Length: 461
Image 1 (cartoon, helix red, strand yellow):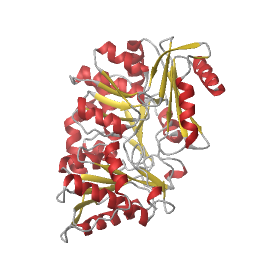
Image 2 (cartoon, one colour; image 1 turned 90 degrees about the vertical axis):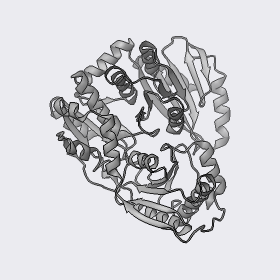
Image 3 (cartoon, helix red, strand yellow; image 1 turned 30 degrees about the vertical axis):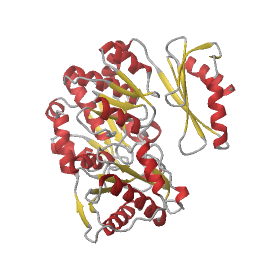
Image 4 (tube, helix red, strand yellow; image 1 turned 180 degrees about the vertical axis):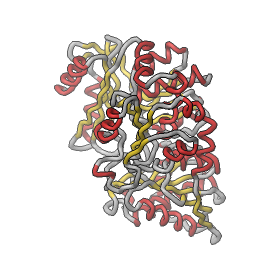
């Protein structure tokens, strides 16, 4: 059933025991094994990790045994591991990595990410090669394959200590509440705080394959308990991560969700001002115009990519920016890996607060004051009957000269169709999903009234 295996923006995901089966996983792993052999050779180490989802550990172990039988040296994580921790080890060990996770998808899903030795998401040219290998036989090249189980956490913790000033956080720390959200960062984010004597409160600090009946996504609708706990604890800030720990969710002292766009802006200011980082800002075309204005005010070069961290990571490897991020809650920084890291993001927010000696709400206000205006964002997913409807709709949007009373001033085709309007503060982006007949429609403007107007006019199309 190789036709059900499709590596999209960030790996292959499918429903466990429906399409994510032993047979299909073996087919996918064999295709990856063939790619590694042809592009890196037989000596390339392969490391394997898994998140807390149902059967993730089972599939990881089966993949490890299969790759050993082909002749590879395989290192299997001895416990649940976040994607950024495994990705860091790929770089450290000059290895390729397989991560069994469905990230923030519903509990019934499982998935497989392939991470090459540069420690970021596999780019399209790599996944195209893997896809072309599906169903092709690959015989063992050696009888001397090996398999060892390893705890990958310690080198990662040591590396974080070179990026984050834990002493500064400890001496100037707010009340911290960590929502484990049943995710892979349990035993990692909390552990490194404990290692440095930084106190915190916690909830949901245990694994649950059903994620407490919610979703492993650090967004307000799934962080209601964290928000209430932050509100009731005066001056506290809240942190969470998604299922495999590569995305972050931050709650300020008022119990409000701080958008990833704001976090990227706050951290850009912090890294430049307090840590003397030099370089560019990498963001996706779906991220806020606020970041464009901020980069210009700071004299920082701006690099925009298509949506998806595989594009962001590729730009990181090319430009070595101060910070790189996307609107969906992923970021990384200079001297780290070209992969999103929710653990690091949360720690850097604490560090920024400590250096400024200000609450997070004040850092948000400082950012808005510097930028000079406030932006509001939204995204609507438009389901279509089939893939044949995607192209005509995009052509229709591309041909627009106005949306209601707002005239189009510029069109960007980096990823789908992005229309900028003459008010210089509003835009829409329409881009297709890579895996289903679905259009993602992004909106940004400066008031809720204008947002409602944009969405009403778009709905009429």
